[in-house]
Length: 420
Image (cartoon, rainbow, N blue to C red; front, side, top):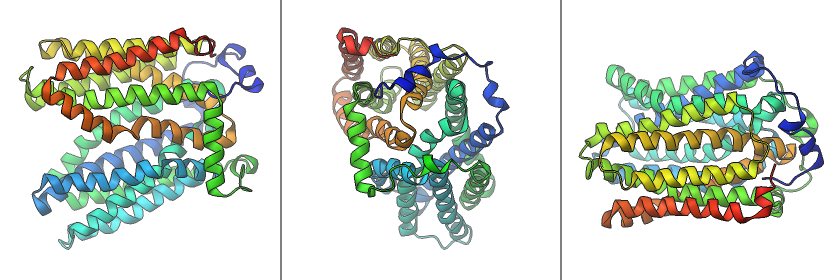
């Protein structure tokens, strides 16, 4: 997807010898990054569970909880491109250090306030806002740092392990957070959260500093100019532009279907309740884990354009099918198979982007991909809620149809098919 450059083509998987599978684990720098990512993700889910429980204990209001989540989500979406530009300006390592340090600095006092019984709701809002701001900087940095840590031939394996860690954190983070809250209280969950961020910060600090030329790229321009340069770079390249459009359409469709449609099906048609909903989400997670691991073992396809077509069709069929199934068991199987596609695309797609993006543009391109993925989520939820209220099957058919249309559009485009 990003602009095809001669050097990038020369360093493509077809032009390089494939390293031993999972040789990336032999890299001390990758192991540090992997550990830091794991601690950061666990800390994020610890804080999510602890913050939700704290707001409900303080207010008993779901509306209050919703506003706290909005306060966290808005700055993350608004500032994402700023985070990408700052990542390229300072270096991904420096941005990650600042992000993790700031999160630890605000969570630790909150833990003390909760433990001593002095916390007030406005303080929770402040922490939520800080987390949203910090996420806008941390997420592009996390996506941009891997090419600086591993050999270009090991990007798929590295991304596969990071994706599997992300999926595991979705399950283990809330579970461990709930256990700590039940055993020791909300304050100690926040304390554990702060400790995870501090340990992750130390691991990132242990990473070697990037070469000065890579970290200093584009400093002559102001931050606003760098953002504009990043937008121009991404949009002027047919490949990146294609990926951004596909990601925006697919995630707009899928986020609403999964976030609103699955709970509606579990509660209504399937009559499976909360445990059934948990099974459906777990199936997606297991499938995504399998897909990520498989992509780490299998060399990426030489024709990336055809992979885009295949994955659009795969996800489209899965989304459309689950909306018409009559019971939980087959729906869980289909969601698991659909999850495999997400694991594959998150591994191959991100690796492909990292490999082909100019080093000084890594942060900005990653921020645009994440913005395309997450920026339309509020609109997706709103539209999906209205459709699911009338008929959830229609919601899944529309979502699947959008993905299939993306696949058809990619298939008829000679330029997309030619992407390597």
